[in-house]
Length: 112
Image 1 (spheres, helix red, strand yellow):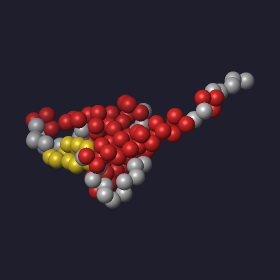
Image 2: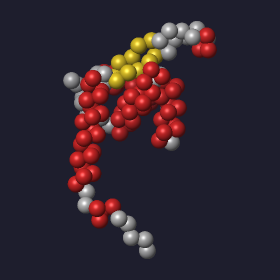
Image 3: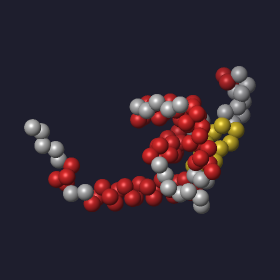
Image 4: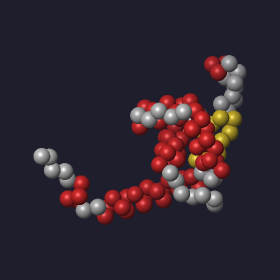
């Protein structure tokens, strides 16, 4: 598997695609990122990252049927692959392991 490391934005995208299930198409993904993490993303950056995740074999996509509401146009639906799910699980376990090692007092802030 090529390029198994996940960047923060790639991780967010994979999580959003996983959450959206069969509604994981570009506009919905962008809207969900905006509403879930309050982050605005350009369409170009979104397409580039989705394409990169497909090349890494973390995502696959397929064209859905045309609909009247889209003027007869089809939309590309994204889905996590087994490798994508494994990568997310690996990141989750790594983060949990690191957080479990942080001493409690390190996260307490003293207000002056």
